[in-house]
Image 1 (cartoon, each protein chain N blue to C red):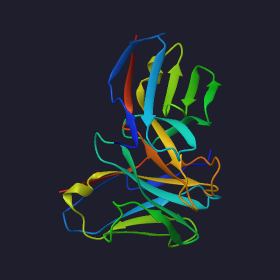
Image 2 (image 1 turned 90 degrees about the horizontal axis):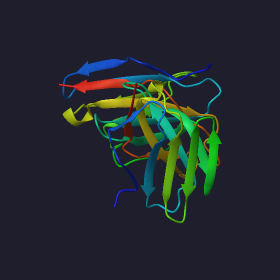
Image 3 (image 1 turned 30 degrees about the vertical axis):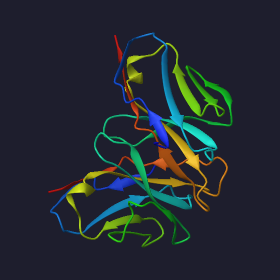
Image 4 (image 1 turned 45 degrees about the vertical axis):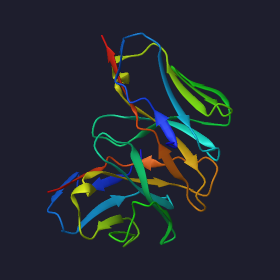
Length: 116
Length: 113
């Protein structure tokens, strides 16, 4: 069964460093998302992406964040200068057709980011 | 007021019990209502979704939506230890060209033998 994969599973970084989290969405999906979950808190939407453009971003997704689809399979989230409060589980998701109506978002297993 | 409110639990029940999980929401624009299950350190996995008010059943699971009260429920019949997980309600708000999900905090469920 197709699934969303994410690498690495755990990333430890120093405050101020740049990190890139990688995701491989399901191959025929066209819409991609990043969510994060701070320990003990709810899953929060960060950004959605379609046709090489951001469709929507939340208030959390400030200038320190960027997303890219560098090739036909990967979808990345970059945090330019990490802060302690960026420590969280980051989930990538993809959907076949995000244009309204029911369309399941499939989630990856997550990357746990720890900022020291 | 939070957009989606969910009692975090934990909720502990004996095997075979009926479990009731609930969420309330404030945004009338939500159209689709989902329940996800999340095991520790894993991604959310969709259990069920519903559209509009009413009930939807899938095996031991029943999802219920009352849009007039802005209240959704998930019932689990004959609960099993393997049902032990965190259950997240999620709602879909139309975001233009892609639909973002708004989650509740999740309710941690423990089913004991």
